[in-house]
Length: 253
Length: 199
Image 1 (cartoon, rainbow over the protein chains, first blue to last red):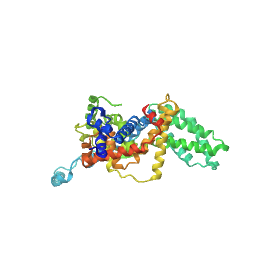
Image 2 (cartoon, one colour; image 1 turned 60 degrees about the horizontal axis):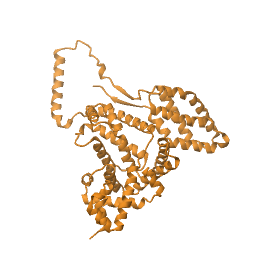
Image 3 (tube, each protein chain N blue to C red; image 1 turned 90 degrees about the vertical axis):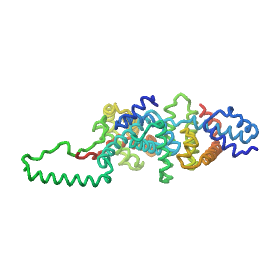
Image 4 (cartoon, one colour; image 1 turned 30 degrees about the horizontal axis):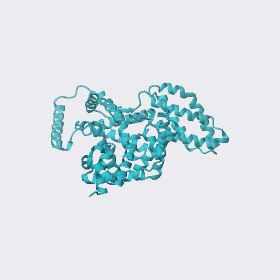
């Protein structure tokens, strides 16, 4: 007795795995017997094929930027891991009684030693015990380029807030765009080894040119177009990604 | 951009000894497949990238626990599935719609960059299909979607899925049937769009 639901449940796994159903004689028999199940099978296979064939391709530039952002997060993660290891290298609680005993013995030894041997030398300072500040900086970006990225991010944020009737803000944005355009070639050269940054700067350069060429009469339409492009290219996020963060990560030994 | 097993094994050993560069190479090699899984689950580019990064960070923290009982890809995919199960996403429809718009635009841009030879009509269809598939997947409840992706995307067996989710194998099979049936019904794309997928 053919039970449509039971049969469809049974063949679904084969359909998802894109197996050749012709090899299953029992399934073929039932498919010939029931037109509805045969349709279900054909439509499901078509859907699964489409689902498998469509990938979601990103441009190489986008992959490269994603890889760079991932790398930055891993690099940021490392000092946290190191600090965690320094804070709790083993289960302290389990060793607490022994540690207390050792500490007491140490205090006693030091105290007795001071009575027996007066200090003749000034205490040495160990340079290795000083604190270190870890700077998470992309080593391939120079400070001027980093500043440039910061200024660019600020300008872009201001542009995103621009309204067509803000004539003063509009004039400021145009002026800044002209200034940024002057230096952008040099910054691209400086960042030549970091391809994602160069890609971001090239996109940014087209925005700068459009800002510089803004016409008062068509400003409303142009600004909205520029804002859409900034949003579409995730330019602000990308500018931020390539700026370094500072954090204190290591302490005295 | 998968690497040879021997090369991967060497990088894993180095990463387990604290070599960050080795781990970064491993991460770059598995990033694309994990991103695709995350994109199909989350439905938008930004969440997919976030999820991928979270999984890689978790993997970095616990790479020393990787015993090589399965492939590294399988291990990473398991971490991602656990991340899906544990995540509590904020329900912010406005932000989601914004993220969705960016994803659509990203595909539109990317398709036009990566397939310049295919003609504009096919590009539009392929972009539509990609977005339609993401939308259709989003229409399925989260747990069901996850079960389906574990099977379809990751090729896990029903038994493996049942173990991971803590449910009966029969429940997995029923769920898969329901999801496929639902997708089949919703997948009412025009013929031209479907043929674009077949390439």
